[in-house]
Length: 280
Image (cartoon, rainbow, N blue to C red; front, side, top):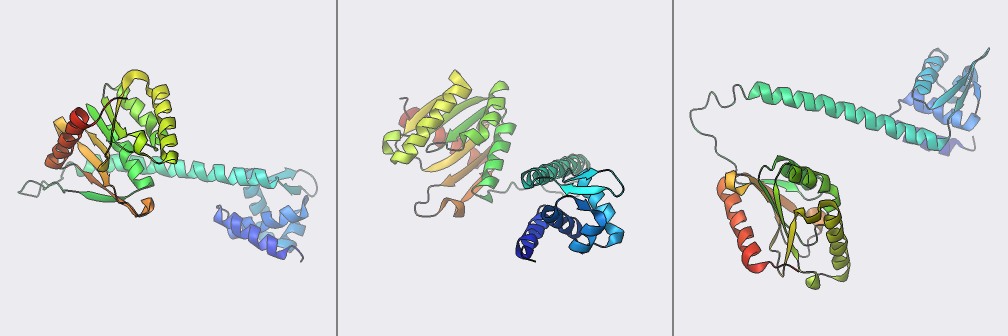
């Protein structure tokens, strides 16, 4: 068949988007044939006749196939754009359901296990000094968690805070709880033109989203980047060091809840805020 390669590729893509082999085969050949009978599609797609009606009903329930009643019924595919959108939506809904299930399990796990956590230990557990995570989606998720957990204060140290648009809702929610926020950024005159432009755009969005609820100061040196929350009451911190020449995706960030480390980082931050950082 002249379109054999395209059909095979389409079937492969449909399976990678969540369909099983029979569903993908039937839909791929239905895209080729257009409106047709189930028996014809069974012969063309090699989906067994005993399965073809069930497969087509499954595809119809997914919104991928239309059925025109009759004797016999006729089946036609939705346009490729609609099929792609529907499969993405179905996968997103499945993932949301899985996340909700995991969140319920997580709540049960915490409630159940904390009843006996360390009850068999005689000593006091030692708080790990650092936990290492990769920079990118993982460190961004951890940053959001810190903002969400903050009760008193958030301190941020960044060059241009390019990730603000990803976390502004978390910051806004923290501010609504009465959490104070301080941000130290690199002096724009010391940034490359592209980074300077990014920083200017982020500052504009900070003013739009947060208004006068946050003070931003600038410094000529950013030795580390990250955030500190609630150092006065123990708190946590996430940070990464400047590592010129190393691609961003290869860098690592450190998370700590060790009280001495958090207080030390907060002391450095406060010294920078008072003596090295300045308002524009």
